[in-house]
Image (cartoon, rainbow, N blue to C red):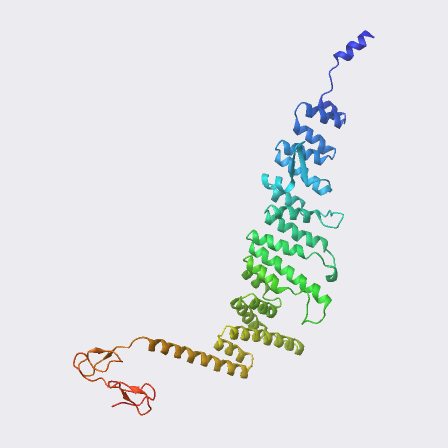
Length: 393
């Protein structure tokens, strides 16, 4: 009995490695923690699928690569991944940690194809995109928004498409990253999607409740990628887009798109119905240019476009208005000249005299004011009457 007690007392406790070999994971984990080997403690947690605890250990000990790997697995498995408790008094959000450690791009690359959704049917990558957008990680957020949209609409018909707002978020994030070509491409996808949805609601090509060009173009204008967007859209409903560009004050860009596309489509062979639709759109758009320039009082420009649109009567009236404006400008110019004091010279001695003087102060010549046959007061040294143009003696 005494010998057995001696053996028990003299027996050394199992090491963490021994516990690990025996598959006694919890004991191995505790022993590694006791001796301060956090790297091995984390590995034990990973082996047993305790990714959240592993992430906590790695974050606490600033082991960036292993922390990101553990968080990846939390995300992919749908376990707690948004907030990590690094010690009893400290928590850190995933977006804060990713940004602080420069791990956002790597994390997104590993999780962008995750198809896990929340109980409400929202993909986790969209939830993550919202978080990244809030901490100005715009490029990564944009990629996840776009991925999320295609994920939820994969294999669906036009009528079933939903959550197109995510494409708008992606566009905004690309633009804020100054990736204007990406922003333009994403906005084009959004606009085409909206038109497709609306086309299933209304078969009348003149009415599409989802055609939201003005709002989308205004957004592109404010975020500095309007030019790139128009270049990508030139084959997509160009006449309506040209018209909506007028609404946001981009008349030059509108005309550039309109005439560029009009020159191409004029050469195409169209059916009678297609020709009628084209002519209707062209006429409508040209009429908007006429209205725009008329309202800006650029009557000549408006008249030229009206002639192009076969609006001869309107063009004639606009030319008249342009003429009246021109005459008004001339009259205004003469009026200004009349207000400037004219310097006259005495016809006898050449001394400078004023028009209201009756006598030259130098030679005492009488500066009489005669009257032309037309009744216009004239000066004696004038050669022609300014009113009737008669030659004066």
